[in-house]
Image (cartoon, rainbow, N blue to C red):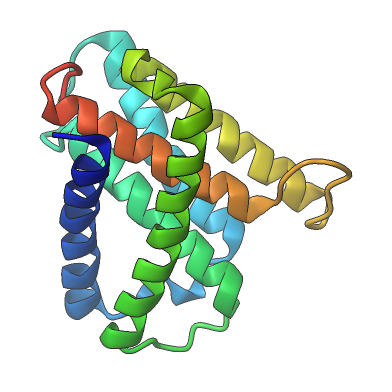
Length: 181
């Protein structure tokens, strides 16, 4: 399989979870402020890192399921940046369209970076993906402390897009049996 196809398959699985949960719970997450979305991602990334360090887990959710959750929360973060945190419900069909729009942006960013970096991510360790996600969360926290302003760095949205792509890469490598899942 090639990266393009693998990426699409990972996203399809994540989107199915996202839309199914929206059908079950609605868009209750619409009340989250950006920092709350960051903390939800942090919890999942920190759990992955802890499992990696302790080499054991006591809760049944897999590392793969945590990366899927991270990816979906990053999409939530992008949707919240777009709509604000007013808590208004979003219809599932509109939500699906927004999800696909943000994933399409992440996908094209991945293609551009893969061109320049030669798919270096295929040689990276799963631990690195967790660390890079945690670093992006720290960046977002700092940008929020700076009231959303940056001098020469990318904004909050760029960090959410990176988190999506790191999660996809981790899930592709788990799917290939190259990383623990």
